[in-house]
Image (tube, rainbow, N blue to C red; front, side, top):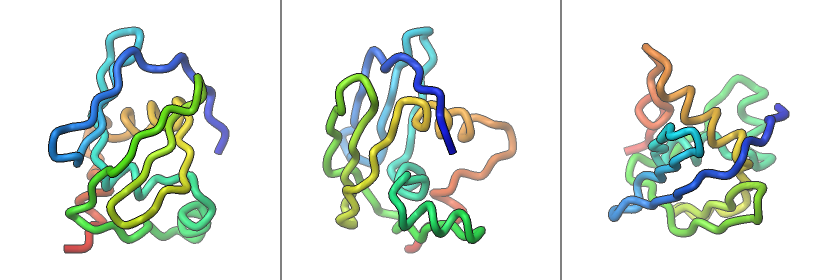
Length: 116
């Protein structure tokens, strides 16, 4: 999927327990993105292949972010406690994930697909 890449957020915060990434956008909107949802929506080839097959990537319920690296004005490279570090998350994808989590009645991937 092609994402229109919005302007970068004005603030990026990792929670103390590293389970959530908060992005504050220029218009004032704030998205709190659980690590499990970010991992499940990874734009890496393996996860894309699963989604195309109608499957969700299995994600541990205790997953955390171990690294957040800024990639210029394009987006973030995120690393996770399960060793996954190949996904490059453009701003448009991060904004889309935040919006999908705010949609009424949507169950976050973290709860649908978590491995205990």
